[in-house]
Structures are given as C-alpha cells and as structure tokens.
Length: 156
Image (cartoon, rainbow, N blue to C red):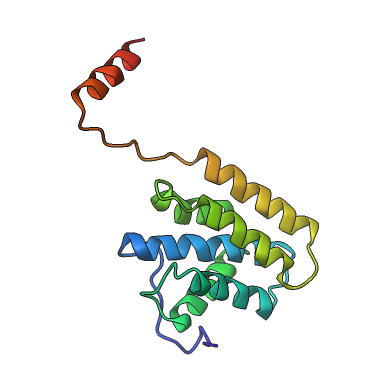
C-alpha cells in the first residue's frame, strides 16, 4: 500500500479525463461509507481498490494512485463540507452508467469490516439519493421526428 504523505501530491479537484473522473467517483463513494463510522479500516480501503480492479473500471490508474486518492478524499470527508466534496466528485460523471457500481461498491465497503454501522447505512442512502437527483446529460438525437417531438414537449 502507498503512504499518501510520501507519494507525489495528487490533484483531484479537477480530474483530467472522464475515465479518471469515473475512478474518483467510485473512490469517493467507497470513502464516504468508510469514514461514516469515524474509523476507516484498511480492509475498507482495500475493498474499494479490489472492487475497481475486479471490474476493470480504472485500468489506466495504478493501485498506488487509487490508494492515495482514497486517503486524500477520506481526509476531506471528515470536514464540515463533506457533502459538497461528494457532489463535486459525482456531478461530472452523472451522465455515465455508474450508479449501479456506486451502490454495489458502497454496500461492499460497509460490509468489509463485518460491522455495518448505522452511519454507513445513512451514507449509502445519501449516495442512492445523489445518484437519483444529480442532473443527467440529455441524449443526443439526430432524428428529425425526435427533434420535433422535443420541441412539442417543451411547448406543452
């Protein structure tokens, strides 16, 4: 495992690509649940990385980088503006089909230390709510009839 204090600084405020944004969204979901009970177990952090690796969701990122991102985000989630941190990491990928992965990951992290705390359950509920309410990208339709239908719906 990587020691975030000795590794290169990580810039996660604006990940550079959609793939990296998706990886950060997955990590933030796991980190949110891990810090919910106020004690991050190494097995919870390992579960986040294992989940991402088993599903090949971020093959472009090293384990060390994922561990460092997890550590940095877990630290940020202990601050009063934690909800904004979560929303800011999920919003850029709200149009990607990640919600099922986010929910499965959050449940696996909660169970990883064999003690599902009430606050972890609340964190999962928060993630579920956020995946439902964050704005989605509108599908691009090239069909003229679909364009006319969209105009009709807007006028109604």
